[in-house]
Length: 105
Image 1: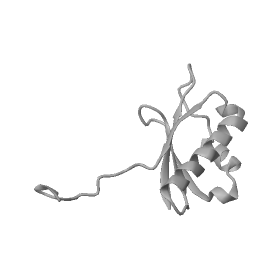
Image 2: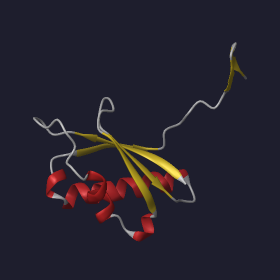
Image 3: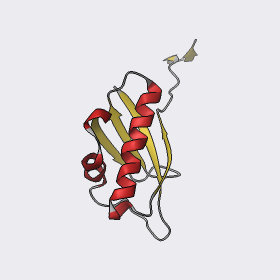
């Protein structure tokens, strides 16, 4: 399972993501995209973020599927018509182990 962060740029004069955005995206997702869950982070900076959890064989495939599902929702849901997708990527984390004294390599 992958977590893809999808950044959305808000239209001018809009401060909030539309109510029910999770359901709007899921309603437009195709079964082959294998989306399991979407979390909403409306106050992420610099743009609101949707955390799209989905099953895929490869990282690139996960990013493509999340982007396609979100673009479809933006194109077909009037509540999202003026929103813009700015990124769809798996967040990369630093996996170095830490101790109380600091980082261990």
